[in-house]
Length: 639
Image (cartoon, rainbow, N blue to C red):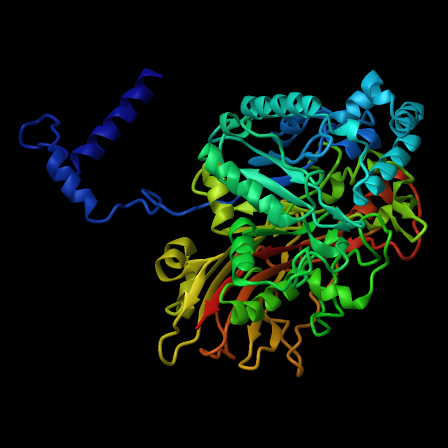
């Protein structure tokens, strides 16, 4: 041991003595000229990682998780508190409400426990039979149903949701004393589990606006700590179902506390055309003031979650073979109204981004200038959306042999079956550090993206000076931030004769499938106010053997999934893709947006894992494979 130590010491000293300015070789002893050493190294730091001021790694999290504090989650049978939710997200093993042990493959970096603000915690009191609540016959009936069986509890939750959609929550459920106790306990728990640098517990809640069953929900996300959040009680739909009133509450909160807040609208596919309609809740046409408020308070949109994917619909994007991924397009949230085709353009992100360009031309401000994230909307307290580890929408849809063919929404107007649940999604934030402030700031500047579950690493910059050789860099961040703007950014005033170029890179999730392709989706406005879209395949896997056909369409990557054994091989696809792409159809006189979509090769869907594990055969309509994906926030070009 001693001889080894002496050898290491000798090597270290000889190395130091060989460096000019660090050693005085003539004196026979080591000395240090600090000023000369600093001058020597400051010319250009050898380490390319030193003193970088830009985000270098995405932080992974969920901004939309419900615990037993949400009245519907509790009625469904969830008894797990925010504490269990944080422990699970941090990587611990917990026991689910149905008694199953569960753990994530890898811990998350941040979490927003976003319980419904309305009747927060009241369901627990109802379940226990609080005498103040038993005076109401309807509440007493729900109490008896929840104590009868899980199935009856689900029915009670359905009745509660229907009542909420009609603004008919029994007043005793809204007792502010209950809400204050639960809210303060929640913020205290968030502080307990918030560990800057390791795990961030962001304080927030869900504003649950339902207008005749149409989903207009938003997650409100605060930047600060409980000393700020405890100064208020969550604003709920019991006070107003109008987003403008929510924004007014948020403005008052910021003025009162000195903190900051933003709102994240849920995916709009259960809003029946209301999420991105071009009039206010009161029926007025948008004006500039409205557009400014919406853009200010809602910088990010939830593009994918368990209740379906909200990027694009095949009726709106017929030339996009990847549109229509895992969509829910049967009706609204409580299925009280069926879907009609005319509603679709006001429900999906791509169409809203296009309509935003047209509105900006008229109003001077784009009300739909949003970035995107994915999240779960799970009501189990568990951020468990990996295909092989999917714990469902609510406690009644946790793993079992029969969850696939039982409705997740069941009404006289129609059913959404259990197999239609989507194991989605996650939010990725390009934050400079793992803290509340840095993550919130990444959301505010839209430097975020969403995936359907896998942790695909995606970088996306736009500018006018990118060169093809920039794609050869192993450190694209150095070039991207030096020459362009990141996802969520803005380009303007194109130099004469130049079109915007985009440096885009993706790296596979090591636990998931290889990458099929990267696409850039462009939306634009013409001089007459009409909007258009086009999807470009900009870089793809297996390029030596796979090229676009005569119609410009790239052939499918193939499929290696063995459904019976629930496995696949990564013999197709690539582990990483990177390119510089310049818009070949650029018009410097019209507004446009661009976002990247990264597609994986086919892999087994959660239904295939259920079929294997429970030894069951599902009907032919149930998909057994999926092509997971990531969506970046857009980059906008404005003349």
